[in-house]
Length: 77
Image (cartoon, rainbow, N blue to C red; front, side, top):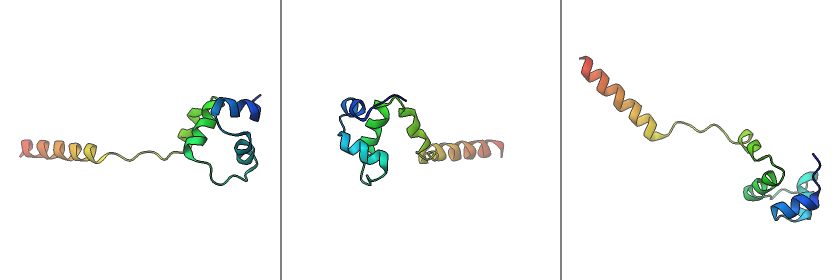
């Protein structure tokens, strides 16, 4: 990819030590904020979507669907 730890550190504001530890798997306490900074620094922020679960339907959306079904059911009676 052509990135050096020093360049990524400068772009992300994260120390070279932290980046090195993360790369070799010895860092167990990297924060989500730091991870996002790293992804931004290497132009791969879209990769975070692979880690996030699909969001469930919101309670409001469920309520609205149920309300609509009830209105339709009442109208057909």
